[in-house]
Amino acid sequence: MAIEVRIPTILRTYTGGAKVVEGSGDTIAALLVDLDSKHNGLRDRLITAEGGLHRFVNVYINDEDVRFLGALDAKLNDGDSVTILPAVAGGAFAFAAAHALRG
Amino acid sequence: MLTIDAAILDAIVKHARRDHPDEACGVVAGPAGSDTPTRHIPMDNAARSMTFYQFDSMEQLRVWREMDDADEEPVVIYHSHTATEAAPSRTDVNLAAEPGAHYLLVSTREPDTTEVRSFRIVDGAVTEEPVTVVNGDVDQHAVQSYLFGQSPTTVDYECRADS
Image (tube, rainbow over all chains, first blue to last red; front, side, top):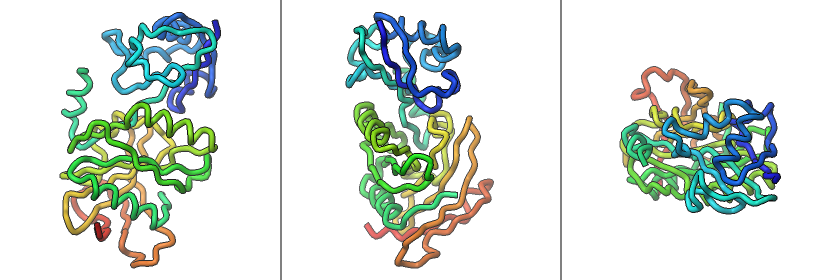
């Protein structure tokens, strides 16, 4: 089971600079555990303390946002391509983001 | 130092004015490694908020893929503040995830003038930088840059908002 995973610039410190790495797993959750075994620390940047996908990280399977596919439970098939992109967000007031972070 | 074409900066300011009082946001892409913003891409603020912005996740994927295909990168990531100064908030700093980008802030809090300032945000550290506008066929001093950073409520750029 080979999943191509595209890594954003800011997380390439965990992959030795690699833009694309390979992983395996039946779900996003399993894939992230597998990736973390090869690129230690990567998973903690994507998963919150509560164990969910970080609100401001976008993960896509092929052309779909995993938020609509079950988030961490989203299913993966052999040959799928996963893309990770930190959400581009911000704004004047911190409490607006704190509100959003609870979602 | 951010060097930007007058026409692109003008388009950014117009975008911010159009979306006021909601925050406007977008990207200016440029050839990878060139540090030159060439292609203005206004983005949808999926949050539609006066105090928060977020790129729509599918639009962001499309734009990031397009940049990758064209060997471009996001040289400028901009957004507007509609009631506060054109400086990064704590939220802006916490969420900045493109260490190579120039974070351009536009403030539309005043109707007659628009504040434009640029910052680098790397590992949580914010550094203001001057903005050099090129190819302007108007007053070259219309956008003035300064490097103090400590008292952002004083001297600002003055961009005539002719929306």
